[in-house]
Length: 627
Image 1 (spheres, helix red, strand yellow):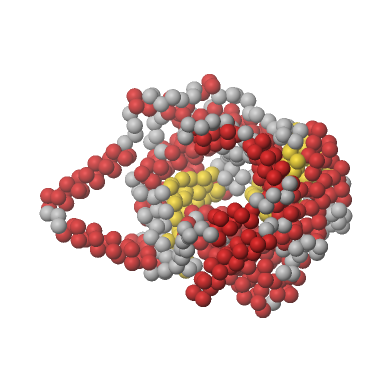
Image 2: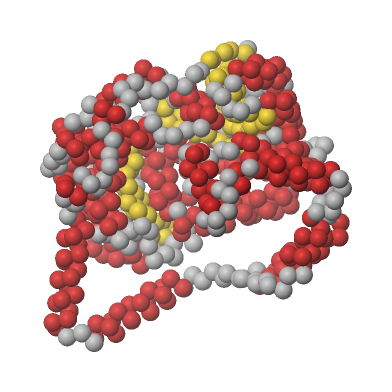
């Protein structure tokens, strides 16, 4: 708000002045140092290879003719820094004063939303183009037309084989025929399950705790994401938010809470768990599970001011996602039309969730006691041993050391069972336009291949899905269509096949290109080299680089979704044995995505939706304005 602008600047300055005078608490410094040291020792680069990460890190010195190994030798520098802290040296206060308070090089940037800006920019661009066109004679216009035709022809013409052969590539015989399995040991602990993955993790325990979420009544599901945030952002009955955050920082590598929802092949019943994920050094495993247990049982749920702030942050994030991540919004709506898991996910993160959050803003003011009561109902529904699991990834020594703490954690959960709720709704299957002020579109179209086409899962679908995203859709939607992205996704658990575009200047043209996929596959001719590249590309996704924590999590997902090692080996053999005939056969299944069962969801402007309806009356069954 206008009246709060200066208040924000003043708050930043006053906070910095306070820190410069009083300094940080000992607990805050310890938490920060432990967090940094944990990250350095773990060196978790996600899906990015560690070797490449270290090489790029060395460039910070190497590019400037310094020692390339210096950035990698952090242990000595960290020990020196910790020694300075232990000596009582005043490190931070002078730095705050020098680089923030006494630094004259400061800028305040204000961003103001303008619902009319998009239309104004478009009008200016149209006027500029019209003005330029008036300067052209007939010959110049014809030259522009021919240049455009030549450009599109060049964009849509594949690279010649002799050019492609210049690119180094793997051969099919280089690919291992056997699927790599992740070690797993499944144990029962009363009504709970313990999963163990014996992998080298450099003395770190990675863990996921899952509590059955199907005990939560349907009407309370939209509150679950905020309930998750309450676990670490409100404090507990004995610690405030700052104290809890510092404790987690001092004793662990981090703790987070989130809902996990997924379809499972062969059933309409979704997989749904309330997840706690954490990591700690082996000698701090007891602290990790003790903090997790305390937070689950005693996290505060009654801080109205903090909860309201979280609600408003969520509202702002969801509204921002409509403009920046419209393809995910469209995909969520399409999934919610066909599966219970899709509907639950939509209620916790899609347009339905946005509607709920907007109503919750008012409810927090007028019915706070009711909100707190609902949050406590969620906690009461979740806390039970029955259906719970603990997933652990570490070396065998650390796993054995952790077992007593895990069993103590499970024993802290109530033994009484909570009845399972029956979730069965879906969104109405309609063609929908979601209207926002935007200059670009996010165009989605989908159908369920299992239900609408009778498709039986075959490993070749992974190859074909990957191939379409790097050829037909890439060329038509991105290269010649001008979108920032065009892709497809086949969910092997639910059977949903979706086309999606990202920041797309087109709407109807993209839908036509989606429908053209069937004919593209039917008439596709692949030589052996191109087919092998497609297969290797799919295997690259299947055999994606993973660090130990990701391997343990992947194994957990396979366990929850009933994906056996035998099935994985079968799919691998089908991938490696994919033929051109499989591409042609998949075209028959994709007929469903341009047939009567297919549905369209687009995030677009009011003007583009109206133009599309003019060209194709009845294209949309419903339209709703979201901003």
